[in-house]
Length: 274
Ligand code: 2HA
Ligand code: ZN
Picture 1: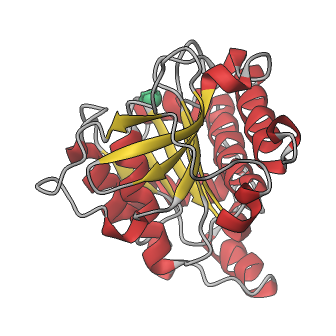
Picture 2: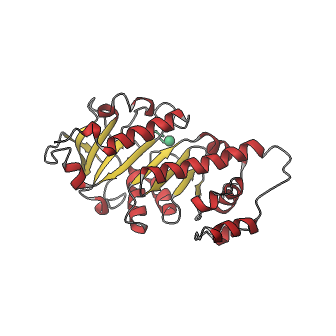
Picture 3: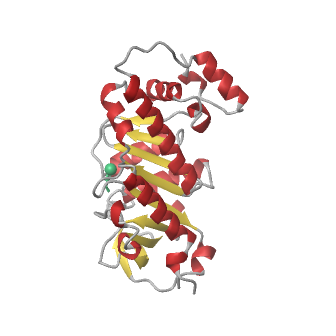
């Protein structure tokens, strides 16, 4: 068996959580990450017949929604109550590798202090199901609390169209990075299946969904793509927060946006232009 602490997926989890902590996006136990793993790759590091213990699905039951699309799939995921700050120094305590079953999840590695998967596990699983239905290559869901994106929620209209349009105008390349725009949910109670369902609905159309006054849910085929998406939205929101109370004399016009999108050949959401 290879050493799991040297595996690319554990290293990527450490890198992404450390970066998000250092950027100030994930204070205390804020944020969570889940990453769909390839069984053949995982087998090189773990005996998959060795179940350490079962963990309840935490709000996931057949009445809530159908977990079937994820049955027997493997995820590495951050733990409930765990701090991103601590993942690098104790990955085997702050992270877990689980296999999804109908009635519970099986812990195969990690959560060594008796911990369990993030309280946002229902939302993560619903988002994986939604993204896999539109892109079978999707593997990553990240929830985070990026500072300027949250700040912007307090001072900007929260419709998908208005919010996306403003973000596109804040940096020239935004429309290339997220041509579909972003989805925005109103303030809702977190940790529930309901917010997970609403997020998943929007994830059919957008890779990134904002939870107003709370944070973002982002998805992607790789850790880099997913992190880069949050980073780009956050950068745009930062520009907005730097300029929105100042006299603005220049802008990126809708014609400019069309020009960029056409040059880079991206399929942007045309109804989000004015
Ligand atoms: O898990 O960010 O929304 C900590 C959170 C919950
Ligand atoms: Zn949160």
